[in-house]
Image 1 (cartoon, rainbow, N blue to C red):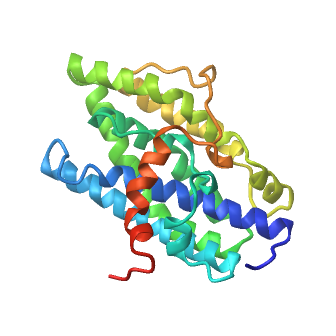
Image 2 (cartoon, helix red, strand yellow):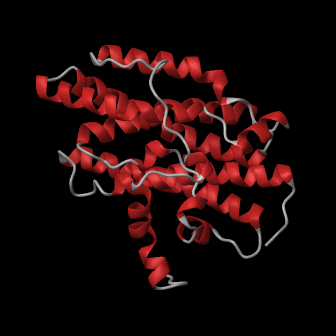
Length: 258
């Protein structure tokens, strides 16, 4: 395997972080295929999952190029141990009911759009900028979809409102990890390769609060407790079960090609 210097290692880890976010969230959304509340939204969830898988593929290809030593997008996506994954804890949480899936998607989408905009404008790495530019249009659609459903369900019936408030309360402790920097992020920011995501934290909070207000949902973003560890490979108990399903074919039939 190629020996990477400090900045190259930080870049590789950062790219894996983005790849893992999109892969793991896509894996969760794929579980809705055939189980959506109505056909149109079943298809919408599948389309969002496919978009995220496409983004993950670009990141993993780039990470494999940085890693060398025979690494491929498939080996990085499918054959690493749990502690090697660097995704946010939020994206690995179970789907729950439709409302919980919508709320998880909304919190992530609100961050993802701003993150990609920042990456596209300020990243020195041309490959990261290209991936961000390609992914941004998809991410904006995802945010529009999840925002509309947050409002529709939050400001809907008593039952849908109750479920959405429960979903927000459940997920709120996991959103602070967006803006808690991992060591590889700090390295790249200090080197001038990336901008600091905390620069858009207030914009993220303002948009989230606007949608929550329209949905008649309550959340204290500033004082919420914060769960973290995913960026450094420390995951919830749900991650192992998810990877068991995700990696089954590759580990059972090594090198299998369709």
